[in-house]
Amino acid sequence: QQPVQSPQAVILREGEDAVINCSSSKALYSVHWYRQKHGEAPVFLMILLKGGEQKGHDKISASFNEKKQQSSLYLTASQLSYSGTYFCGTEWEGNKLVFGAGTILRVKS
Amino acid sequence: SQTIHQWPATLVQPVGSPLSLECTVEGTSNPNLYWYRQAAGRGLQLLFYSVGIGQISSEVPQNLSASRPQDRQFILSSKKLLLSDSGFYLCAWSRGNEQFFGPGTRLTVL
Image 1 (tube, each protein chain N blue to C red):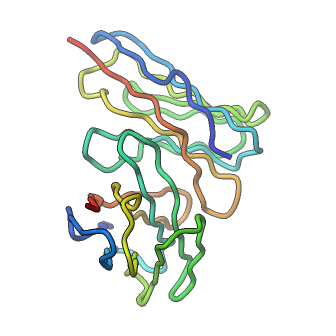
Image 2 (cartoon, rainbow over the protein chains, first blue to last red; image 1 turned 120 degrees about the horizontal axis):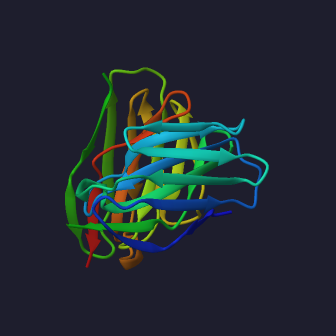
Image 3 (spheres, rainbow over the protein chains, first blue to last red; image 1 turned 90 degrees about the vertical axis):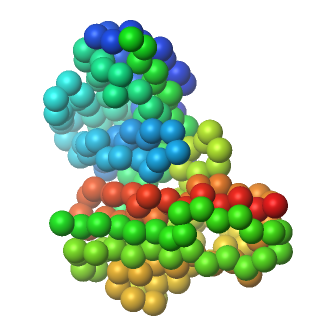
């Protein structure tokens, strides 16, 4: 089943923070986060494995709550370059990902 | 380092014509390979995946097929294209947990 992402879209000003959520109805092995710019391929951001870990690099981090089957992506002090569509991909069997519908993020100056 | 190539980058084909899209990966061996389709403004739909030469799993019934004739080559084909086959076709590879996408082929069926 396709994971549910929220919100569908968000508009920020530079420097503001955002949270994107991803929920699954199935027990997950891992959650993958990607960012896609218009007309380009998705770019891998990070992967979180079951165990409730949290990861981050630069000002983008994520958490994975295995019990709730939820993951959240945190973008702090957003920059113009953060604009794009963010997808979570959930893995619950054998190296296959099921992607959410995406969250459109627009950062304005 | 690993790189993934797809060609062509764009393609315009008439309804009923055949299709062949190619994907190759460099810098790794025995990767898992995937074909996804993304309709305009939509999410990513897994079409096929392969864990080895000649091993193809189909996720969605359709008029497309995939083949893996070599370890690092993945081909997406169709004998007769439909209008609904239009979209952005992405090949991806993984070896371990992380998946990485190729640049994609934008297909328009007229």
